[in-house]
Length: 212
Image (tube, rainbow, N blue to C red; front, side):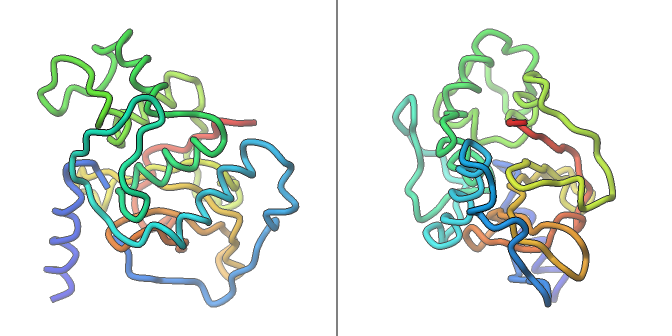
C-alpha cells in the first residue's frame, strides 16, 4: 500500500518536477532566529518561505495564464517551484522575468524536455530544470555535500526523487533539526508548503546560494 501511495504522488509530480508526510524532527529550533538574520534578501527569502507554510495549503501543477512580470498562481496553492519563486520575489528577484529573459537569449542552452520551440512566460520559470539551469548560468551553484551544515538558510536545493528522474526543489529554512544537525527544508510536494527534515531524503542534484 505504501509503495502504491509513493508511486501515485511521484506521478502527480511529473509535469513540473515537483510528497509530504508531515515528518518533523523531535527537536526543532530556530538557528538563527529570523531576527538574527541580517536584514536583506536572505532574510526576506526565509521570511517568505516560512509565511508560505501558513498560506499555501494546496498543491497544483496546472498550467495558468498569469501576468508578466510578477505573475503568480493563486497564493493558496502551487507546486514546489512556486515556493522558490515567491521567496525570491520577496527578496526583489522576479524569477519569472529573469528566467524568461535569459531563456529568450539562450533558448538552446535550456533543457529541451517539453517540445517547446520558444519561451512561455506562464510556465518556464515554474519548471525545476529551468530554474536549475538559470542558477547555474548565474554562477550560483555550490558543491553537493553530505554535511547538513553546508546548507544555509535562504539556499535553494534540488533533488531527483528516489532515482525516478522526477525533480523537486525547495528552500533551506532557519529551522534546525538538533538531532540530525541540519536545517529543515520548506517545500511543497503535494500537501502545501511545509517545513520538514527532508534534505537528505532524496539524491541532491543542485545546491544554490543566490545571495552571499
